[in-house]
Image (cartoon, rainbow, N blue to C red):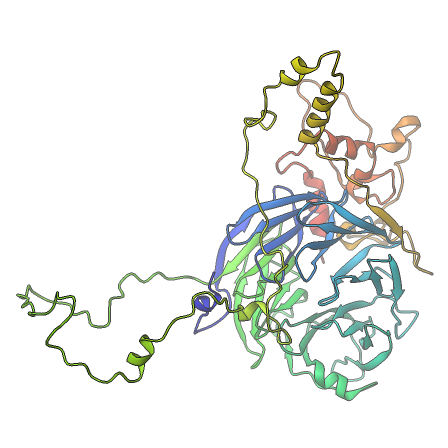
Length: 562
């Protein structure tokens, strides 16, 4: 793919819907890899679906978690994928094999995680009601980042573009800039609403190019700052934002914001409906509003790293927004002449000669001289869009695409090997090991070698409540209904304590495995899909299309997005 040929000379933002990606189960979060060739989608049944974005087909499905996946992030080289689920588990996955390298168990739900832009050994985790945590994957150690106010632990955090600094923001509008290696405070400032009033920080996002970053606040204004000015102001500085973006008419609150791949545009998803607002960063004017299906709520937004394409999630489906490509088949050669009527063509005497003997040889200058130069067809120039400003060459070990095995109708039959009974006939009393070799071959052909169980590290955080429920599982209403009761339901006795519901006798055919709101909402080890019922369903391979989550849970899930 030649990215230079895809450069548009006009606007560089999407204009219309360009199809959907259906992951069968409900999608909750999505993220592109560094080159935009693969799209990872986290679903509410714990699976991670990796899409090949060029072919718009599923390249791999990883059965990652038991509870819904709430956050995803790619490593820099694309070989690793870090995920978080609503049961407070953070896992690292090998994208090629689908194996889990290691797990981390936190005491509270994970709101966001982010891989270090340069060092693939570090992961930034934002637990609920806790200070941000910097994980080191190689030795499973963690560092709790300092905060401005110990009483205010609603903190969001993000790496800057190159991972040199970590920006944190709390509910009082205070932004801290910390050195990633030493965790020392480098700069700080407070976001105010014109007067001395402060506003809560909801998210911090950095552009892939340049030094700009945006802050999404609770006052429904998106502020764009220059990171160099923040570092220059130092501690307790008063930097002015480059732009203030907001919806003055409807006062729309923003669910998710991000920069375009080139950093020239900013997209914000509404928290009220499936609507995407696109601004031009340099001027601050609203250039486009993309409207999805009426009545749907937006869950996540991701902009393609190198192309004007946006992926948004609502009602469990990934929607793709792109430019309208107009095909023009009426273009001709520059010297083409359109004739109103037939004209008799007079052939020149030397028109079809291999060499024109009568032609005089003028001196070659300019473009004619350049045609005789040798053209280098062996050197491969690096694609500028795939290289960072501090890099000269592309990463040769990067994982841009996933190999897809062809679908075999009957995988148990081996067309290239011996017939099934050959090893049995060859197994004589003199050679008793032949039969065992067949069993080993069968085991290897069915499930491969026994996978090594991933190491689980428990992260201890002081003073963090362990009974918090992830916002994806929260219920609107009075204060009593905001927290779900952990553990088994009341009234269950004996063996039923490990199951999230009591089975009822059915007449006729048994429907697909139902998962209700309290099954996915329970955070206890015996509740939800973590109990025996959920594991049995996965072991038997029950994957009902679209029925993995019942209708009450869909309403419960979408209802808590505000």
